[in-house]
Each structure stands twice: as C-alpha cells, then as structure tokens.
Image (cartoon, rainbow, N blue to C red; front, side, top):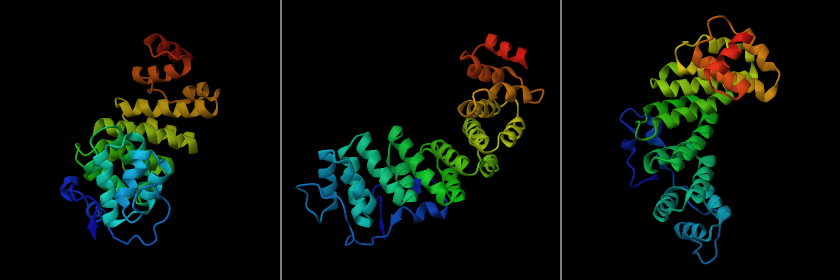
Length: 278
C-alpha cells in the first residue's frame, strides 16, 4: 500500500487511536486503468496531479469532484499535495474532499484531522466524512473520534458523530454519552439527541431529557430542542407540551430557553410569564 499522507504521520492521530485509524491512512493502489470522468483541457491525461491542478485553476467544480471519486493510492497522494499546495479556497477544497468522503469517509476524515489546519474547512470535512462513516459503522466512528487529541479536532469529531448518530438512532446514541468526558461536548450532544429523538417519539425524548441532571446545560438544551422540534412540526403543540412537563424542571435557564421560543425574548420577565402559564 501507498500512504495517502507522506507528510502526515499516523502517530499524529494519537497514541490511543484504534487500529482502524492506522489502517485507513493507507489507501490501496488499485491502479488507474478504470478512471473515468474529468479531463480538463490542456492537462496531460496520464497525470492526475496535473489534471487536478488545471481543474482547480479553471474553477471546474465537476472535474474536481470527479477526480476525487476515482483517484487511489499514489495518484490520490499526489492530488492531495496539489490541493494543499495551491490553497484552492473553501469551495474547491470542500468539493474535492466531500467527493472523496462519499467514496472513502474513513480515509477522508483521517486526512482532514491530520493535515488540515483548525478552521472551517477541517470542521466541514470532518463533519461530512463522519456522517458517512456513522452510516457504515457508528461504533467505529465514535472510537476513532474519542482517540483524537484536542488539537486534531476531537470535540468537532464527537459533535459530528453524535449529530449523525442521533439522526439514525437517537436512543442508541444516548447510551454512549457516558464515554464523552468533555462537559460542553456532551451537553451539545444531549441537545442534538433530544431534537432528533423528538422527531420519532416526543414522549420518550421528553422522559429521557427530564432525567438528565437539572444543573447541566444539556438539560436545558434537550428540553429547548424538543420544543423546537414541536414548533417545526406543530405550532400549537408547544403550550401543551410545556404544561405536561413534570414538576421541578423549571429552573431559570430552562425557562428562559423555553421563553425564547414562545416570545422571542430571552429574559427573566419572559421566563416569569411562561412560568405563570404552567
């Protein structure tokens, strides 16, 4: 095999990275005889790096995406070098890497973590790649995200995993939250799980959210996101849902979040008004 990243070491993914992290940093060189698609004018047809260089300079989005879906092995390594060398801009960078992620989300996520600088492009590619990875194997994607260091985007990866998993199976995703030790990351995940769970079963989502620690931000995020889901599907259902909540949930932070949905104003007065209706 030929490594996708000759300038990005597998060990950069952390000492605790599972075997899957190291396996997928190498992409088999299956050859290029079956390559189809992109052929930007004036580029040598047997030189993928030159093809990509020309496509990037011409702003040919279709050719850039087509190349990413077909290149493997040494050809992909050369293309990634061109992508980083030219500083192609967010549109072309994301087009290429998301097309790669559609075909090989594991390799794309790992390359983004190890080789892209912190910022919007890395966050976008990791989120997109991990959403595809979760569709294939959510446990494996979670294990990889947990093994990342903070510098390589651990929190971004975990948020992406839980958002994608919550869309597919929120009740299963909720069972894995204890593995997340970062308080803020776990709270955001709780909010996402509640939102997508409420799409399937509002009663079950509410029961789960109300069992979260009242003092945690995740408790407020979860209840507010359930209400958000209700508002998106049934405008008049919010009042009934608020009145159905069990006693003891009405701490100030939660009330203010709920008040913002009802009145558009996040304030103590608005919270008191909502409390008076319950």
